[in-house]
Image (cartoon, rainbow, N blue to C red; front, side, top):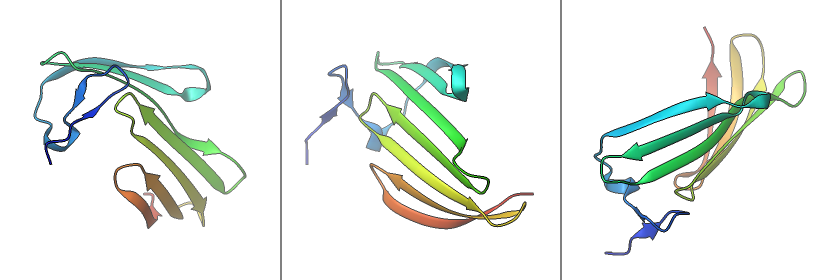
Length: 104
């Protein structure tokens, strides 16, 4: 149980017991991809790339997220009408999910 994961920089990953102060920024890259960089009070560096709402078809949207903690996420959303959608999601830590998306 004392096994510690490491991130891409070889730093100890404490994502399950994270209580930290961080300083960072987010920058929007071309194609509306968000780049986020954070430095925690104990010197851990975390970088991530994320994009939501990528149009695949008129009613189908996709999204993704990857970071240096070796976490990743993908999602698909089917738009039923302007207020309701069905979405599925895979997260490397939590697994599969499915749900109803309500927009107001």
